[in-house]
Length: 316
Image (cartoon, rainbow, N blue to C red; front, top):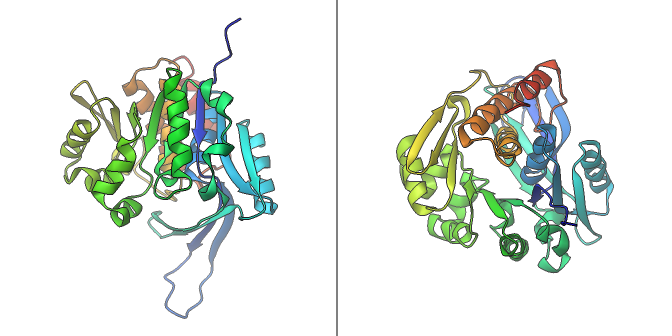
C-alpha cells in the first residue's frame, strides 16, 4: 500500500496578536479610547489556517511555551482543523505580537521572540516531513539561528523525497536590517519552487521600484521558482516561464491589513497544490485576502461572504 502523503506542511511561527486600533491620534504621554483585541497569529500558523479553510488538508510544525497562550494556540489550531505537531518548552514563552493598526488600516508590529524562535532540527518530526508533498516556510524561521537550521533541515527532508517548497520573505524591515545580500543568501539556501514576496520586500531584494521590474528581477534571482508578488490593494503579479500576469484587486477598502499576505498565501497554496493554474489560484487568493483586510485580525471568523467566495471556487 502506498504511503499516505501530506499535501501541505507549514513550519514556523505561531503567536498571539494583541491588536491595538486607536479611535483618534495618540499623543506622547496621552490617552485615547480604541479597540484592543487578542487574536491568533503568526505568519506560518495563519497560512496553515487559511489553507485548511480553503479546502486543503494541512499540517503545521511549530514550538510553543507550556503556558496559557500555548494552550490557546493548540486549541485554536485544533478548532481550525490544522493537524499540528507542536514542540513544548518550559524555557520560553509562547510568542506574542503587538500590532498597531492606524486609521487607514495599515499595521506596524513589534514581535516578542517566543518559543517558536528556538525550534531545533532535532525536534522536527522527520517522518511527517518525508511524507510531505509541499513545505511552506516563512523567513521568520531564517533571520536567526535557531530556528534557521531547523528550517533548512526540514527543506532538505522534503526535497529528498521529491517534494516542493515555497517561501514567504516575511518582513521588509527584517530584510533591511539583515541586509539584502545576507537575506538573499538565507533564501537561496533553500531550493524554492514558489516565492511569495510583497512589494516592499520585493523592492529591497530586487533593487527595483516598479512592480513589473521587481518581479522580473526576482525571477532572475530565483530562476527555478514561480514568483507571486503581492501588491495589497493593487492585487498581485505572477511570473512564470518569463511571462508576467496581473491579477486585479477585489476591493479598494481596508480596515485591518493584519495577516492579509498570509491569507493570500494559504489560499493560493490550497488551490495551486490541487492542480489549479497559478493565475486561477492567484485570482482566488486575491478574493480571500480582500475579504480579510475588511475584518479585524489575521484569522477573523467566517461569514456568508467568505463562504460564498470559497464555494464559488470549489470546482477550480
